[in-house]
Length: 325
Ligand code: P6P
Image 1 (cartoon, rainbow, N blue to C red):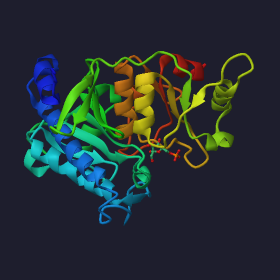
Image 2 (image 1 turned 90 degrees about the horizontal axis):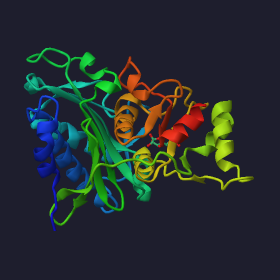
Image 3 (image 1 turned 60 degrees about the vertical axis):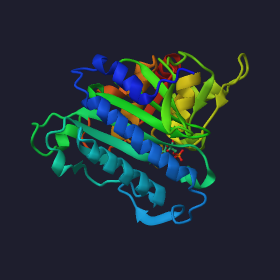
């Protein structure tokens, strides 16, 4: 059994990384560690009522925060601060970015959604961690600044996600293709299971909250009507788990399109640009797919604030093009 662990894979490919100095490799290893700890806490969530349920806190998004969001956020923050390669973080659960006083010489900043889809935890549906890595633009030796975080997605040094589902997988890219690693719980290692992921350019699956149909634009309504039309073709399948990481992961492997357009409740879209759409767009494009906000490439959007939202159409190239036309 020639298992290639995440650490081994990173070590083998780190010479391919831009200015391969090992820092980015160290960062990826630490994110892997953090996700193993989150996975452990999630797997016993149903048992430890101290973890489940409301944290009686509201995050910056005005959403109820479940205790595991906070735990996942703190685990990631601690692992990244210990990593030594990260000078600061931004998170869905933090109102502003957090500069690490003791890491002024580190080269990278990391933005993450610690537990996306966390409303699914109580019903044991898949949830995920999403992360995005930028090389800092502020001078080494000083505290990181907001400019280190507000960079367009095409400047990402790395991006990835961990999906905590029937098994736990880490999928990431550093700009040289996409690779997937499945957690082997008995040895506590992420092992290469999906090398060089390429997404199908077409599939008959779409993923969206169709309950918002009445507030969609005509363009989106036309696309949904086309998907449902079975007069001279088989209707498409609608698959929607309510957890972007899970819907995205299915579409990445099998093909399909995930859509969160402008709706009455979310006129600017619901998904966050910096730590949901940018990392997923980087992965999608590296796997041969596409990601737009309906007008422009997600990765070209110039960000103006940390928690800004965007509409998102992401998945198989042919389906994204179909929706655009
Ligand atoms: P709705 C989870 O809160 C999330 O950010 C994504 O993971 C998910 O796809 C979407 O929102 C679900 O939103 O409005 O359909 O419940």
